[in-house]
Length: 211
Image 1 (tube, helix red, strand yellow):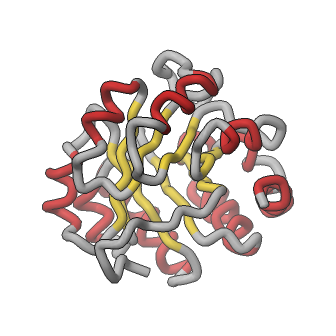
Image 2: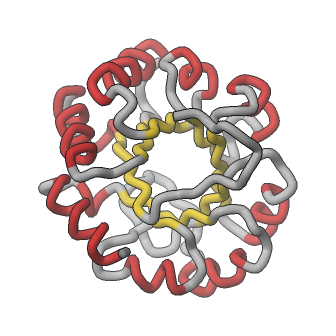
């Protein structure tokens, strides 16, 4: 499921993230990934801020074996491990490997996303080889120990004018507020917490709301 051209990528409206810190063990995370895949989602990001490189790679390989090519797999932070696990892309933050550094590691065909938290960072990301830009947190979030300042819907509207790249909104997004985020200009919403309970049912509800 790698890129086949330099054309702008098409993001699904729902961008699910499975975060290792939300699960007591690897099997719980793998079970959630299966449920999300069963809901028909075409993309999934695996995020692990706490594990060692070996642990991250081990679980990434397990996800690839379990899901096959049924959906596009994106790894958070680690471009080298994304290549090693045969993932379809990597997502980097402001404190990770630079966009162009990550592109050198993954090559031209894999997807590459970058997190931003303010207009200045969006402007800096726009001319890079990133395939999409994430902005957030849009709303208060509990998924990060030290979250960046909330940008709000107005922040999404503002940065929408700064880039033509696909824009992913993240941070505190739920089934109750996701439509307002798309209306503000986001192309997709990244969700962690509101998919944890009954993942397949929750994902299917998101898809109906976002349709």
